[in-house]
Length: 400
Image (tube, rainbow, N blue to C red; front, side, top):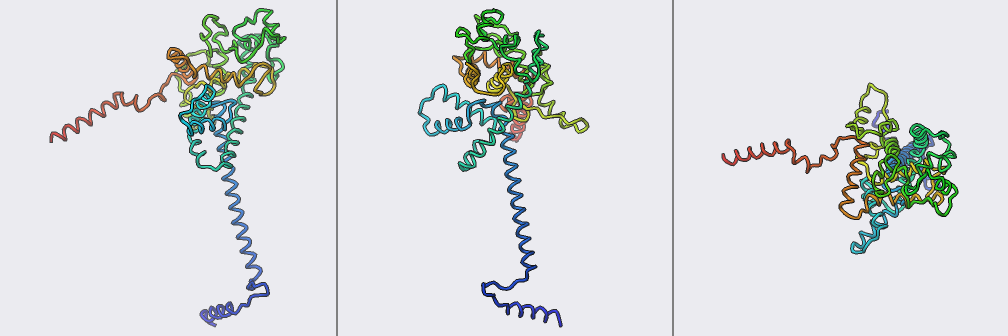
């Protein structure tokens, strides 16, 4: 039989197939099985791809969320920040109080920390947006816990080294911290009182009415050399060694905290970290937090975050809570940010700006590459020479 005749016979047989009682045309079981297996394999591949996509999204959002508590807000919810921005968009003429202004500044800081988030919120439906915010908050909480764990051991070692207390702080033992420990008590003591005064010390420890420790006082650990000028309470505020050490340990590296006494050694920490990671012949170098969250300057929110971390570490409280006795951490965080952002006038603004510049120099060194904006570069000689050469070319062309 020729190939043509065989093919024709096949066609003739297939056209004679008669449907069964169910209406289905009889099909060999092995053929059905092959098609079913192929369909299941395709479905499995699809599920794997969807799972991988969801996992990547979750990992991305959680990773991005690690910047939120550190750079935006320690206690305020993302929903409150978004709601305040929406309120202002709906009625631009409506007046705002200080709390609402603080929320809006928080939303602005959030957009600076996560530039992609604003457009993403507009694209997603409500359920997907809520799911994304949950993942971001998860990342923020995990990062906060990681920083607390890091500082717990470091702060204890710094105090033992710098204060040499008769009763050394024990690592991983919060029960030995707080006002019960003399060195911790001195650092936690409100700046308006003298910890060395026996009445003050006893009153704070006994939590008497005359010595209420609350968020309305600046603790002594915030001050340079841990001393305060009663006639100028702003002098030396937020310039203490332990605060600089904690900031560096959190945002650059624990080892960089050893260089807290200098005024910026001229080294670009972020650039050095990037170059070290690119050198293939060396051991793997961990990326610093500041590089991961794209932080180039010290901000009021980052200072407030570290202050709260140090205050908690010095205390005897075992786990994070908003209120510790008479001390409210959320209001304390707001007080710190307001010190920098809610100023009475240009004179105070100038002092605050210089303080932030001091902090950035302390943490990131003396380099100012990030300040080379297009406007600044346009006034420099390389740009000026390029403009002159172009002008000469145009003048020659016009004369011809």
